[in-house]
Image 1: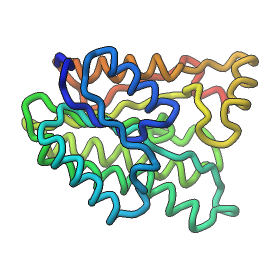
Image 2: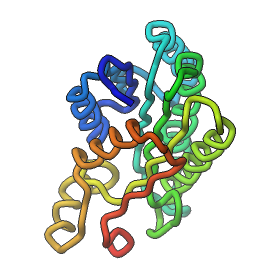
Image 3: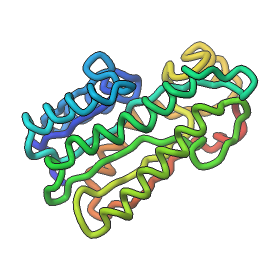
Length: 222
């Protein structure tokens, strides 16, 4: 897909990865529609439906939607609180699903695509005591792959991009912890590298339902 003058909606546009995707898309000449956490509260489905309907009305021909939103709440069962659970499911899974539903009429065009950013922890729980994050990412993976099957042979395509560790402030410890682990030899993708891969997936003429990118030592670190 040639992205010049094509409309691309980015949910989570002010996050570490989301902002890098917005910058990378700008290089292609795409018309980027950034949706930030200030622009929509994904925990409020009434607001999600309202904002997504407004986006669909303003942009009746959307070529790509990128779900780059998410929160990383790392808790074990013993210290898990209800708001940890509800926030993780709403922001990582339920909110994005209903946002996609809201803009679906604008995505029913030739070669349109929905890209969900997943996590390696949504395929296998490599690390302990991250219950709300792991469960919500397993759910996101299931949602994206199920929609890919439902829309097989039709548009939009649904693609899950499963990622290993990325150098952002996401989750507990943020950049400080990641920088310390990097000094000890742990490898991270940069947000810019991830953004380049997302543009590649949008342009890919033989899109897959899932792409997986891991730094080589992904399962060794914390």
